[in-house]
Image (cartoon, rainbow, N blue to C red; front, side, top):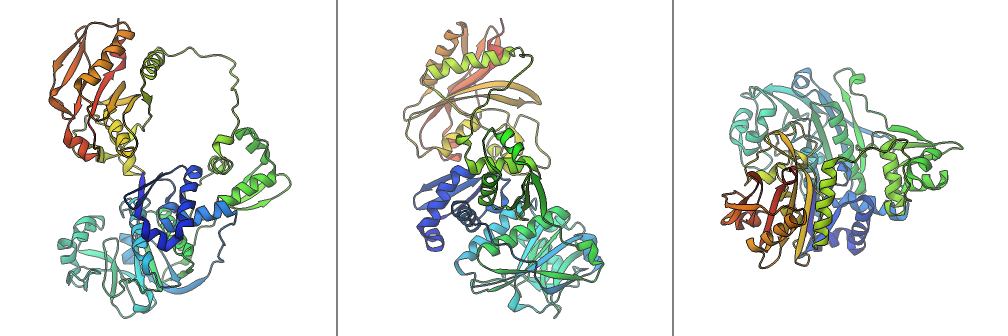
Length: 536
């Protein structure tokens, strides 16, 4: 998940109470979490909607939905030039840039930089695929030149004023150089953005120079995007343009010179066509073409309603939309998933029930009857879950879309603790369970995790519930052996054995593990391998 947060007082100053009310109401439409605590407002978004990764763009999207007023579409306008040299293109071959002009950025500056960094991490894959340079246009002289240079021969002062030195030394000694210098490769040569006076504006994707540093008083921006992936570079540009447009800035593409301009032509807006009949069939709703067009406009699309079809222009900042399925989903969101009618599916042949699912249903029925609430979390979890735990799954995603979905979970209990973290301001007790798949040492297993969170939750609390569960499924030979677990307290945890088979563990969660998740009450839990407890 992607988190944006800010002090409520600051948000009220920028967007008024009405804007915050719109964000809260819009959460049920888009499907994000909205939380307020101790004067702070926090929103957790799915990683696919990069255009909503700021309060600025989120408020504008909410206003568009509730007022049914489409976002005004600017005509493509041009201003300024950027001259490309072949040397830089060997290092980072894709380049985009634009100019944004409007009011002083003022109190929106922090939000702008936060949005830039979130795009760096998500779309740009931590600057590998694309990176963004923000410059004060009034401090530089156009045209901008994108060229490469020997890092021993070029010197400049970094944007934060902390170092003025050769580019090679900045790459070695500055914190940004240590983080992102590796993206250049051989640091003897690097790409640079120069203005017409020959001053260094930036060394992408690593760091900006001090000459063009932006300030709260900045009114005009020159924004450069460089990358190693064409689509990521284009997507990044359109997302940044959208941020400025939502603040009321006028934006202009800059003309690209120095090389064949055909190689740098702007991509056209995605155009789709959908028939009302298909919408009615797939969503099971009786909706006219006019109603479908209304819902599409609320979600930001530019539509033209014809006699037998609807032509749709997808805004360039909606980088998540790839085809008809995405359009259907947005229509359903606007209409309201709760308003969709259920429809019984017709099968010619009924499949036989999987025995493992039968076992899961048995456990589910017993636990719900015992007063537990079922939760469901993602099979892919954040790598941060394992910052204090040893990962034993041996299965990681090499190129994840988001770090929130980068590891195949090896246990359910960390997802349970994450659930408690997200619900720590809710009432207690919170007695929950989850049934799901895990990967342990490369092998997929089906587990159930039962958990109790409340003041006084202890080993005996969860042991009593586990023994009740085993009695209900007809197993009475459960034995316990003291077990040293990295998640559970020593002396307050045990390994469970059934007919000589290790079937799971139970105990009290360690205080430092609870603290890492921000949980303030004791948690006792048990995680069990489902197939092993049903072996006869």
